[in-house]
Image (cartoon, rainbow, N blue to C red; front, side, top):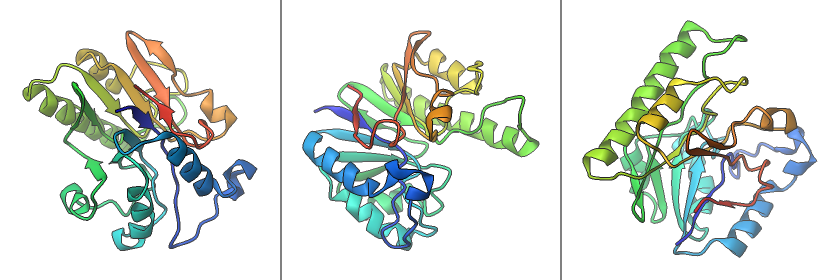
Length: 229
């Protein structure tokens, strides 16, 4: 019953959007994901998918991509990314699939851990942080707390958080997200969103103040689900 993570699948089986414009590493990337997934993940395992799942604009357009994920081994827990415009009501989406579960203001269980999270947002920085950014940033902090608090009220004391955006800015300064992680004694934070070598270097990794931060962008982990636990 292992726990894996892989973000930024960027699927587009119905509305084809080639990813190789972002580099040769993306050529037939969905085939790489499928092969690695099948060779590693079993039906007893759980896979966290923190955002940017499908390029579709509507749920009906995303169904081919979601059905493809649903058919892969294991239980999959999905989180909305900044490109997931197709995202609908979590309850509506969960009723459509046997092995896909959607994280939004709620939590799921992995052994004695609560799997919590929210999409996140750009953290305050010196380059660009508008009033709109501030509004969304504060809303996402609130949603993170809702997810963690729901688990805590049900008696959970151990947490793993999934978020799409990095938990801090390019200078690794403390953010409201990090303060909540530390307040709840979160064990691990799984995230994606970053692409290409320069961006990878801006991602917080390793253990900081007792919390392990794990970057799972699919191109960063060579399209191979990474074992979290």
